[in-house]
Image (cartoon, rainbow, N blue to C red; front, side):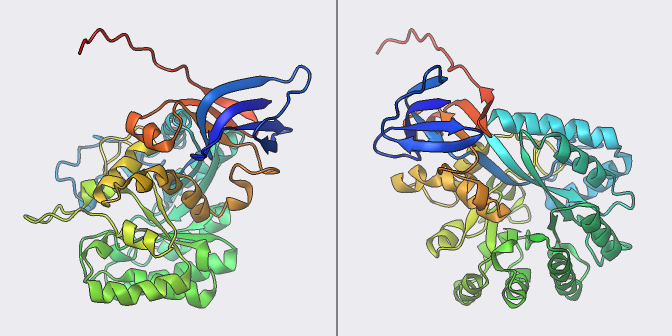
Length: 413
């Protein structure tokens, strides 16, 4: 396959891209086609690495309103409602909803997904179902699964045993939720346990960390210290960290030194963080998002996730990372032209670093031919216009093809 005339990652000039045996084999300003080679002439459209959703909850997706709607909009009511819904989970129920969400994501150019899976369930129903889904979709989507203790590790009966069992069953990543444990001491102990478990089992780490507006919630310093001391480094990700938006600047300045030394990654979830954050404030209301701009400016890897798709924590969501990205740029005050042009990295390259897949991700000769083509010349226009994903190509095969919308507009100036 020869793809002609694309702007690769906002490049000034177009390139041609050849795909052979499922890999990028040649990238150059002009490539002559082979005899009978399939040619796709994009006439100046934008080619990007595939979108990545490094933080979503496929076990809970499509359950909004069941058994009730989260009328308060708080994180804690979401957990309460999910705890009830979790009692009725079945293997097929989880698989059906997860695949429905994945189909939406694929249509929107996502090819790599990390899903947290609640393992505070003695039967581990959702994990068993999503392990099967992971295998069934592997030719279309690379799916990582996080053993996520939604109701705590120490604060849930047999929490440690369930986490260990989940790791042995095949979870790719070890998670945690220290700010939701009964006590601060439990939170610290849970972090020590999960980092040790990941180290022993050869797993990555991704922790729901300080997802609360409380400036005294400081699990992040413990997680970063453990990442530094264990030398797990960039195998560790701190998700949410919304309490950082409430930290005082002096403490944050000190904290950033540790964060740089630790090499940990960060994932913000702008849609859901903004929805859940500030719920206990009158005015001024906090934005509910971590310090994305400051982290990014400090050279610390930050990515965006969608987090929830129609579940007890977020009643909306359609698997489109452009929505999460747009919200993140607005809330994070990152609206300069260069900010917007380069912002695709928050939902692609930066996310790939969190998932530790950079060795086989990216538009480079020799790597798997995974890419998307957007109906625009650059990402500034693509984000503004919510440009269509004309092609999503995975391992050299067309996964999704979209015809551009046609509009007849009789408006006269």
